[in-house]
Image 1 (cartoon, each protein chain N blue to C red):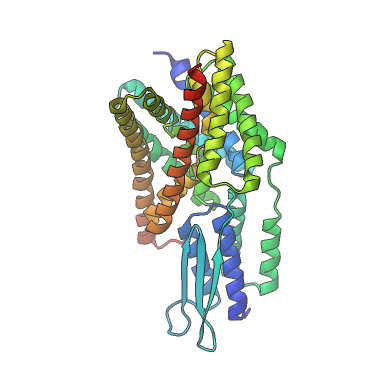
Image 2: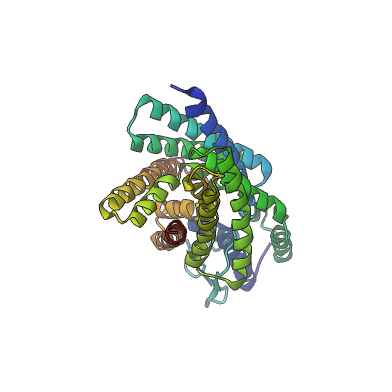
Length: 150
Length: 259
């Protein structure tokens, strides 16, 4: 097990990329740092689960849940839109690599492999969305039960 | 402070329109407008003081029953969108402030103008951010230092191209197609010189700058909030961008690897 290459470096890259993405969305600097830490938390969870040998979909689901919980709590505390943190921290999870591989197999002309890769990328996107769905729905439920304003 | 129906419509439609433009979720837009209207006595509970809001990412319709009993409608078509979450945050604070303090019309419009003119990151900083995103994602997807450098340069070029293309107001599909085609072309050509070890990580890294993050997140949050029409709208947009990117990259790779 290679801790540097499997855990530390991906987290570092995620943090830097998150900060740069925050600039694109015109978020103020201290919020970007907070969002970057959220990205690192999810990446850390993802890497650890992956090393443990968990199912890939579970890894993505758990990472998306972690991001959502972090964003919801922080947004409530600092009274800012949840989006501000969620947007940035979720981008490193986007299965860009898998989509690219699907596209490459399509060029190669292997339709069966293309379908397989597409389903793979889509199911990853789906499990990320489900993670966000699950947490956000629970938060909405909590808000209704406690009758708190946004 | 009392406000005429017309002024209230102006305030709510301006705030709502700006929120959509800057990339807020639809439920936030509808909720803000409902709260502001409620603060001035239009709370949907008594007949004749009702307010109805309908928003999708392209359009905003607000109807308020005026004091004379006739309903008044203001509609706003949103064609231009630029993501600026800092201004969304400030507009959110403003609507919270309006609900507690109930300021008069002039004060509110003054605040809105202040928010509209808030500073954004300068163009060089934005270009640099594209370079950093592309370079770090090239490393993230397993590239080496050479790949990161090439991806960073391509990131800068992507930003410059999208700035140039934006002048002709292209469709989202076309913009993704042009940018990714340019990125893939450069990546393949550089890999032919032997400076980089293949072009996969370079292309993935530089294309990550084009990922429609705000569209994807808003899509999920709109679906959760039950705004299915808005969710479908943003989902379609995200899919079109993705298809555009794939088409551009695929055609460039096929073209330049074949000879």
